[in-house]
Length: 511
Ligand code: IMP
Image 1 (cartoon, rainbow, N blue to C red):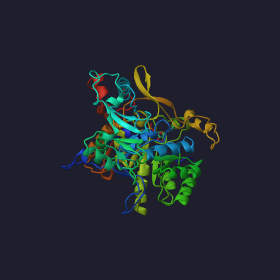
Image 2: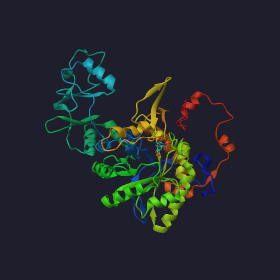
Image 3: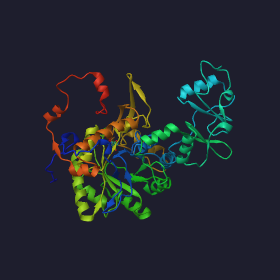
Image 4: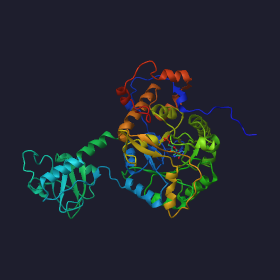
């Protein structure tokens, strides 16, 4: 007969944290959110840390290049999806790694002969107030001068004048030479009291622009996740079918972390893949495994210390229908607690600390806080990021509200890529494990994360924790009855729509 566990599958919304002593001097802005993504051997530093405990899901509708850049700038990490041909995934990794924070390619350019009225229109459309003047009007032409909106008065000057009559000519432009460091470029901006510094090659072709406002922006985002060469960090998903080709290509492109992407990682296929990566690329490579939902699954994937981190979750994702399609999975809180407990025992036995990622099913900030308190070192989210400006899908207006498409990796839509890929045989998909949906647009990643992280830091202070490891150690959680869930809401007062607009705790259900 099957074994029937003597427990109930629990989810995060069934738990609450109990406040503990907050010491004087503790403040949300002093809380450290750094967390490891690689296995940590006793008395050693992790090989890879992220600066906030949040990563974006390996999904087509989530982790594209724009999101990857924005999230890394906030201190988190994206996992670029592997449900695409290897060369396309490699190109996306390459784009993130080659993004030089602070150096931008000019997308509004003009020529000396252009009329002012046309430049005014260009400035209006692009929202830019600085326009390089190049020989051919391109972003890489020979720089002839710079025109800003301070060089003319729209309602005083003749708009039929040519750009060359108003621009600062090249001989008077302060510029940097190609190869200049960001620090030196910013020093030039500071010294000459300029807002924009063009960077030119030896033939005076325009290479990039450096803006004072980007320097200020960087100062406002000190958690930016950079590698040793000051490039943004990025992760990538791999699968059990083509890892022998995909992994070397991703590593050559400079990927920082890889992770097997599977709804069920408790398989010999995944173990073969992990062993192959270790045999061929050694222990320096950071590789995660999963997903598992039990101590047994954790033990299998860890083997003799083979993976760096373990991803937990099956069936909890917002677009996921695995449990109803196949009758398999586990409440996310129960899965996490089982694995976390085993991780603790493994640490005592071996001295090796294995970070755990809670993947999927987080419906609001509160649940993320509970997941981290319960022992997750970081969380992976899909829907949260699908709703932001930077996710790779188009903004769509439905009944006057802005939405973005969001679909699971187990949908026909996501699996279709194999039909167009040379390397993979097209697999007939008999049933879907995910749905194709829309989520409301919530704005830029930086803005939504700011609120989420402030709430997390604030709760950590309530529990007297200065770091995520202290948070896990000190957290005391209680289960809530249905009645206390009702009490947590605002059931006895009226709320009007203006209040709702200020409240973004419920990511998916704003209206
Ligand atoms: P969310 O944050 O609740 O939207 O969940 C995202 C997670 O759902 C991903 O990181 C995956 O683990 C999982 N997932 C993605 N696509 C599918 C699918 O089609 N079926 C089931 N789970 C999925």
